[in-house]
Length: 124
Image 1 (cartoon, rainbow, N blue to C red):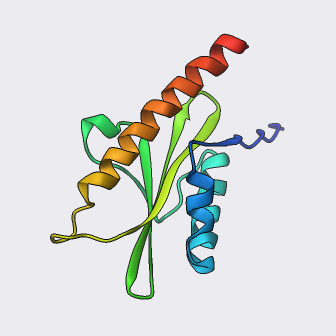
Image 2: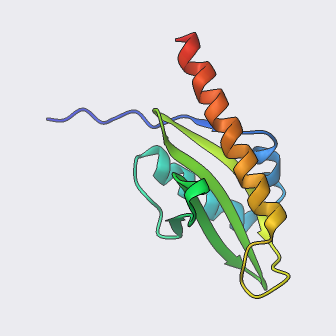
């Protein structure tokens, strides 16, 4: 009989945890369940890979609540850890595109996650 695998730990990059806690309770619940799925090496139905080469490996969880849309970005393919990058309410200024300043934030946090991952590897 197979042994159950341990859930992957979550490492919060920058203020990602505080950003998630600032979202409405119903949204936090969905995002928390999506992270739990990732910890179990599965993908939540509301999760999908982000588009774009610079976001390779980043998973985006989408949740609509009220008249707003919310996002959680995380990386699950760096070792045996989940790196939660950021959470925010999406406010598109033109069409359905994610505003550039938020994409820049995701890219910066992804760089930070890679740096944290390299540092963790050096310590072990």
